[in-house]
Amino acid sequence: MTQNNNEVLAEVRGQLGMITLNRAKALNALSLGMVRDLLATLLAWQKDERVLAVAIRGTGKNGPFGAFCAGGDIRFLHAAGSSGNPELEDFFTEEYALNHLIHAFGKPYIAFMDGIVMGGGMGISQGGTLRLVTGSTKMAMPETAIGLFPDVGGGYFLSRCPGRAGEWLALTGDTIGAADALALNLADAHLPAEQQADVWEALASGSFKNAAEIEALVRSRCTPAGEPALTPEVRAEIDRYFALPTVAAMIEALEAEGASEWAAKQAATLRKRSPLMLHVVLEQIRRARNMDLAEDLRMERDMVRHCFYLRPGASETVEGIRALAVDKDHSPRWSPARIEDVSEGEWQAFFDSPWPAHSHPLAMLKD
Image 1 (cartoon, rainbow, N blue to C red):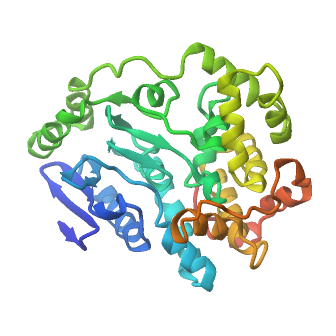
Image 2 (image 1 turned 90 degrees about the horizontal axis):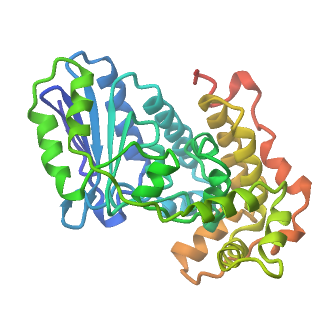
Image 3 (image 1 turned 30 degrees about the horizontal axis):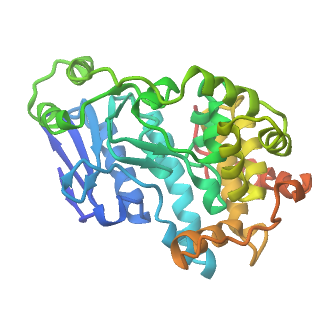
C-alpha cells in the first residue's frame, strides 16, 4: 500500500506502516487534506493484520527528519475564519478525531519528534506509545500567542504534566527541549538525531514476532537526554505561581516587587498573550484534569467553535494570526486589552456547548 499526495507519504514496509509528513516548506503544518489522509491511512492500518506498528516522521529542508510538525495551517485558519469557509469546521472535527484515534490505536505508534513539535504536531504525537525526542526537539503549545488555546487534546496531556507545568506551558507557550519533555511526561525516550535514519530503516527491514520486539529495537538505540533546563528551583517557581487561582492573581504575583528574574520574564510573556484566552486556557487545563480524552476533545471542539464565532468580527484567533502570520506586524489588538479587564462572563461563555450532547460533532468518541 503506497499513497503519495506529496504532503503525506504512507507505505507498508515489512511489518510497519510508515508515514512521512512531506510539507517541509511549511514545517509540515497540517492541512485539511493531510488530516484526512492520515485518518484514512490509520483507520486502514488499524484493521490490517500485516501492520504490527506505525512509525511517523517529518521532513526538513534537507530531507527526512529535521522537523516534525509545526501545527495546523494557521494561514488556512485565518482565511477560512475570515470568509466563513465551512471547511474550518471540518478541519477541527476531523483533526480531533485523528488525535483520538492515535491515543486509542491499539498498536505501537512511534513518533520521531525531531525539530519543531508544536500545536497540531503534539496532537499527532502525544497519543503515541513511543514518543521519541532528539537534541533538536523544540516542543511547545504556543496557541495563546495567536489568540487560541492548546487544543488537539492539549487540555488532556498538559493537565497530566507533574505539578503546575501544564498551566505554565499552556499559558506562556514556552518552548522546551528533549530533557524537559521527558521530565514533564511529554516524551518517552531520547534518540540521538543521527540515529534516526538507521532506526527507521531497521524498523522497515526487520522481522518481528510481535509489537514488543519492535519497541525493544527502538529503545535499544535510545540514550539519556542530559539534564533538564528546568532546574528544581524553576520547577518550584512554576508550581508556586501557576497554582494560583486566577490569571490576575498569577500576573500580580509574578510582577510583585522582589519577584525573581524568572518571574519577571514569565509576566512579560503573559502580557503579550491574549488576555481573554489566558483566562479560557486556565479554565481548560483545570477542567481537563478530571476528564478523559474524549470528554476533553469535545470540550475543546466547543471552545474552538467559539474562538471563531462567539464574537462575530472580533475573533481573538483571527486577529492573533493576522498579527503573527498575515500582516506580520506582531501587534495584535486584543480585546479586552489587559488581563485585569477580562470579565468572568467573557471567558465562561467558551465552555457553553453550541450542540446538544447527542448531536455533538465528536459524539462518537469513546474512552
